[in-house]
Image 1 (cartoon, rainbow, N blue to C red):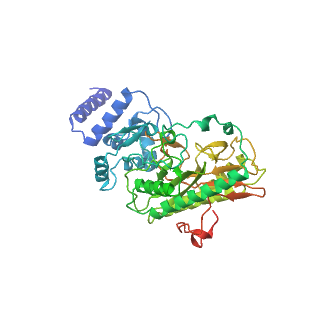
Image 2 (cartoon, helix red, strand yellow; image 1 turned 90 degrees about the vertical axis):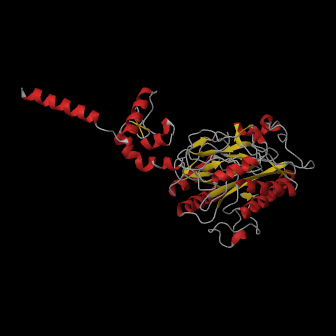
Image 3 (spheres, helix red, strand yellow; image 1 turned 45 degrees about the vertical axis):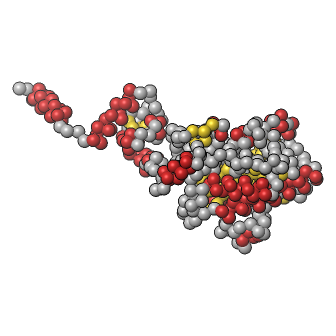
Length: 437
């Protein structure tokens, strides 16, 4: 037999022997993932964006969506493994007791929130979650006594005066009477947030925090502005870990090492006051302290430039510069806003650099600055509830907010910390009264 023919015959025999040999379970999963991916609609490689022909076997076991686990080759998969493997942790069950929390909440008639708060479901929705956090069932909407003055969305969830107002297109200069009412309302909002801060500890649910905010607001004679605003189901926003903003209070218990932002808005005296802060739950890691402290500094540096004649767009430049210096990113999807007798109005104040915001600050204007800062990329993903915005990469996010009055010579922080404010931030020497912000 000629040498070449002999080689080919040996090759065929070896191939037949390998086909008869048993195949490992991992190899079968790998082969199945590649076969199914090839016959489905083409997807892009997560690392290089080339057409994908391979899927992570671990993601196959965990039944993760195709789009979050596709690669063009094993080489790209290996190169991306150090960061890709984090997605597997995001689908593992939460710590023991979480299932029991859901069962107990369901027994009380609590359900999962859907469609921006206008619908409920008895099962957690399917979603390509970006991090470890999951929604929990929420309690029924809290009641407001009849004697409390309410905004026009309190009954049907639809703001009427706000979208039709001329102050959506021009910035209102507040009268002295309006400014005084805003001072009173913002002071109450600060006291409500301080009450929430005192309640934060491991084991407390975010629904417990919402109850504290609701009761404190009602006790002060106010209405919690978020309640039923475009059908938002709760009296405040609680954004935990990778949630950027608009997190809905639910049955999940806060855990040691979490961070949680509480966003409080109060309607009192015919106007709104708005502020938020990000708090530590027990002892947190150094990266989270760095994130929260840097976010606080971003807001302080932005407030420091507020005065008549400053362009709104400069706020974003200051915030972005400091965030970049500390290795963090600025969320671009949400911005500061005008506030007063309307909950949201002009001006819009982006927090990222090189933005196109038009206009300059003038004495008598009142607006919020509320930077959202991420450890990873700036992009966000909306949860199925239609409100909760989470980081696209599952990394943590922090936020701080104040309501500000532009004065003749500078700025007045209407929601500033009080001497009675709890000492929760280690970088504020001297406790609650050690800082005006």
